[in-house]
Length: 105
Image (cartoon, rainbow, N blue to C red; front, side, top):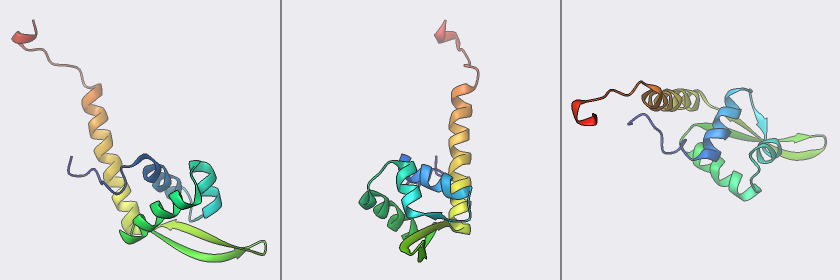
């Protein structure tokens, strides 16, 4: 289980990372709405992932309003891939046929 990344594992962060893996970057408000979290909760998750080097953010203007754009970094993409592979291993263990022993009867 060493490949499960505790920074990615919380459900909101895992969803955030997977959403970012599908786009070049996403607007803060879109991420907030899709994750159904408050601005402060999303800001904390982004700050944690920025601190780890997994995502980057930039300020910009869209339709005359200031906004924040968030993107997955190459190290973040690799970390997500390792985490997903570890989750797949766990799932494979659950889906594997159960071996019986003489003690099982």
